[in-house]
Length: 80
Image 1 (cartoon, rainbow, N blue to C red):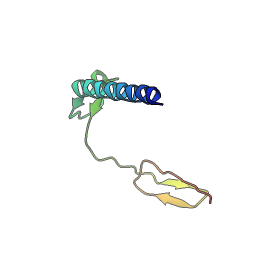
Image 2: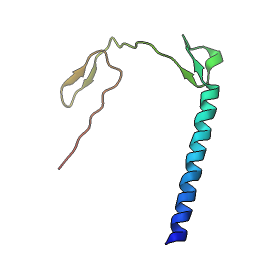
Image 3: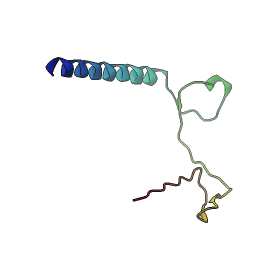
Image 4: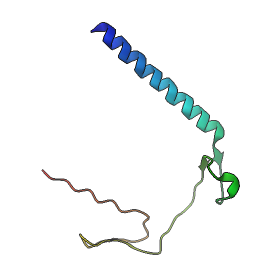
């Protein structure tokens, strides 16, 4: 049992190191404060802050629900 757990711990640590490398690379390549979508930012990792609005209401016809000024509506159904 102990050799099996050592392998699992090693694989888990390897995965964490890989994620840390990916995050550090993303931080180096990140473009902050992008004001508009341009061709030079095509396929780049960008970060921007702003306000989004939608003039058209999103409707769920089955449940007769409507969401104003939203960009997404999610329906979650559960059965017990």
